[in-house]
Image 1 (cartoon, rainbow, N blue to C red):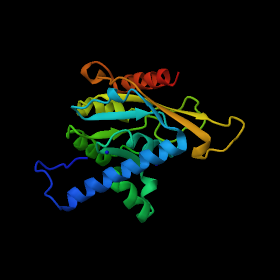
Image 2 (cartoon, rainbow, N blue to C red; image 1 turned 30 degrees about the vertical axis):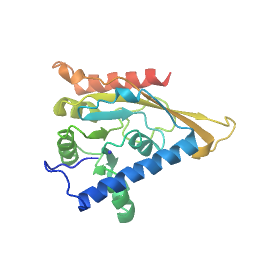
Image 3 (cartoon, one colour; image 1 turned 180 degrees about the vertical axis):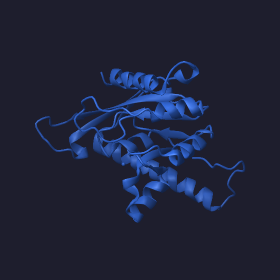
Length: 218
């Protein structure tokens, strides 16, 4: 631009659902291997992702590598809200859909996407990735922040886990954005339960999340 079934019954041996889970875990393993090889992938604070409840993973967003970087943190089924434009190519849409992405119209209040996200959060094993910046911010400068992650946290009663993706160029003189020219650290902060504050607005909440992400970058 993460394994679960939404039914109450476990998948039967040899069932398509079980096969999808196995393939999903294999893809996560391969992704983790690749990003470790290319980036010298380092993870700090993995224990901060809640194990007994659903959660929203929110990070800064500067590269198309960010979704797979977050998705490879855990073998739990992780879902992504992705801009609708990414689903125009049917083959690419099928690939990212298998890995948990679903479309959202960024220029309108996409109630369908928000409803789907809330439904996913009802499953306590689900993780949902939401980038507050909405799109890639290649400059690192202050950008427009969208309150979607905070809204979902409040409505879904799920904590937000702030995450900083810190990219450091191995060759600082090079302008290349290829993965092997970068070293990436994923710094995971403590989960935020501000939805328990009945007086907080989604805008105030998401600003606190972005402040936490900025601190994790340092």
